[in-house]
Image 1 (cartoon, rainbow, N blue to C red):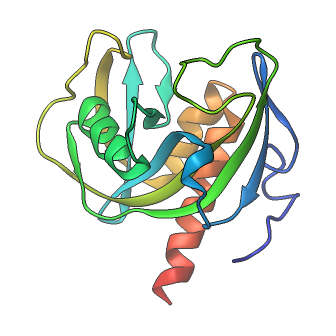
Image 2: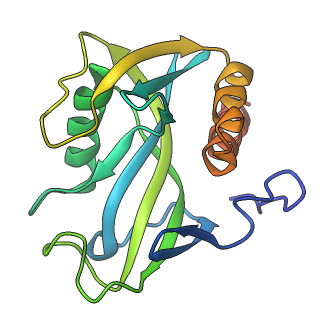
Length: 179
């Protein structure tokens, strides 16, 4: 697997702080299921990518926290249907956020704590319906298929450089894999 270019991916090359969580991104496709708490996807639909917007106006990264006893692929299939109204066709892990929480308790009692991993990958999806919008999740107001540059622009406009870089990296890795 290639190494991360710090100049091209500055947000992914430094520690990221999500509230009480400090995360370090690593290119890595070897998964230790016992540490996985979350799984996310950069979804492709043909040559374009899928983005979704929640009711606070923000564009978000598809994925989420695993349920009790859920394997990451099952969780990803569930999240893709809930947030995008899509069926997962393929998935390739390309990175992991190695996280450390300073909270005294885990976010949910069944996930690893205080060290855990958030998986990130890319894959093909098929849009088959509307997002399920479960009451305990984000409320999706839009799902759009856009060019990679448009997706990156939307995330950068809301200062989510980490997500913008994940989309860019996934796009490049996918292209390399096709050669």
